[in-house]
Image (cartoon, rainbow, N blue to C red; front, side):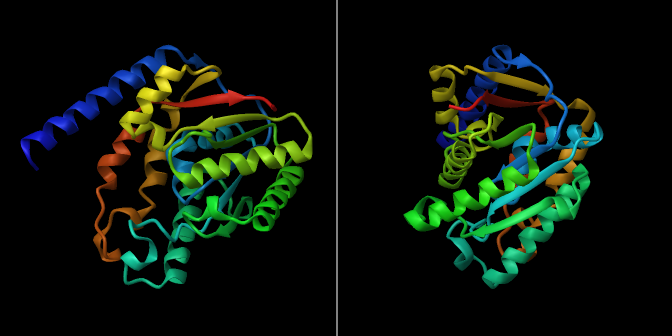
Length: 261
């Protein structure tokens, strides 16, 4: 790595620390109220990265947690399934198995997990009919679970699938017409330096902080079930353990809480 790249890496790390410190200082320490929790995750691992601590805390408190994976996780490598020798169907199966194991660590049973299987990284390209079908499917899940709270990605969480998932959940809630607080979690927003700076500049109304100290070890254990993201036998060794420190070494999770529009 060149000197310039090293300086840039150190600068990015410093900016992340400063912005997170400011976000923490301006957030309100809180806990989720009791009741069923419904989590929408764009990909297999976002649920553990963004809100694994809250999931574990809710299960420890005896509340039910239902997790919905919106895409099939098949584009977990740069370049999509073509970047690995594994068949797409096998890659999808691996990602689902990893998600089931990760959520078991956090206390979520298999029958509380739903896979909607939309194509990874194509969620924002659904035509109008497919989009409405996805909204209807999500609305049906919300009606069935009747959650006290919903966790979904922040509507500006960088990745197109995260943004689209947020929009789908909001559209489903608008269609349902019931008042449910949505706790918007952050994944890419905590890694992309330029977005963190924008996030700070834009202000953070409704910013909440949840202390996950009692379940930090569980969150880390859950994330390590996603072996496809860092082990070389799946063709592409990846530096995820270093990236994971960005999430597991922080004893709290940040959420932006919004009610219905």
